[in-house]
Amino acid sequence: MKRRDFLKSSLALTTVAAVNTTPSASAADPSPARAREFYELRQYRLRRGPMGARFDEFFRDVAVPAWNRAGVTPVGVFDVAVGADMPAKYVLLPYASLDAMTAAQAKFAADPAVRDAAFTNLPATDPAYVRKESSLMIAFPSLPRLELPAQTATKQPRIFELRTYESHSKAANVKKVGMFDNGEIAIFRRTGLTPVFFGETLVGPRLPNLIYLLTFPDMAAREKSWDTFRADPEWKQLSATPGLTDPEIVTNISNVVLKPTAYSQI
Image (cartoon, rainbow, N blue to C red; front, side, top):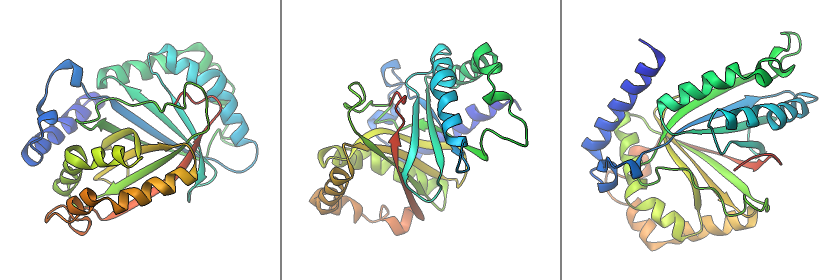
């Protein structure tokens, strides 16, 4: 089975599960205006030393412009500010569809600037990075497209929080997606937890899971917003709903705080 056909089969199974488990109006809306993006999230693990500067030089001068030429925009590139895996870089690539993803990857690989770059052709004795992990997600029905932070255009200070929710089964995972779609994201917005994207993971490690990215002006704003969220009466009621409590549908939550590189487009 071709990779694209496999991904489409995975998406079909996800859609069936969502329809059977979370009967939200947005999930059933087939209009083009509600078309859901796909997100590829890459984690590059590095060694301390020249790897970081070499990575930044390649992505700033070669990779990000090449992705843009291939139709992928905006491209997010982030450093780890607070997290277990350091040093590391995170790269976020949004795609309009699976076909757009495969076409963009082919264009990127064939781009002369990428193909001929020293970074692309480093030997095994001096690799560009230690390891790369990747997850492919489909956007939530209620947040079908990535939302750029207001601070991005003016390059104002901002941080991001990347959170992963793992579940014990696909049914539990779909319930958590529905919980976000049908109330929790709205509470997030109201309490200062500003979303960039929410994605249901189709391919990647620690499945089944969902991943989302929030943005804040700084760490103090992050702490204040989370405190407001935890104290919110509507959240307390929603989180206590039988069948939707964390012990029933979430087995692990992990998070990492990121800061954008100077050349990040997010």
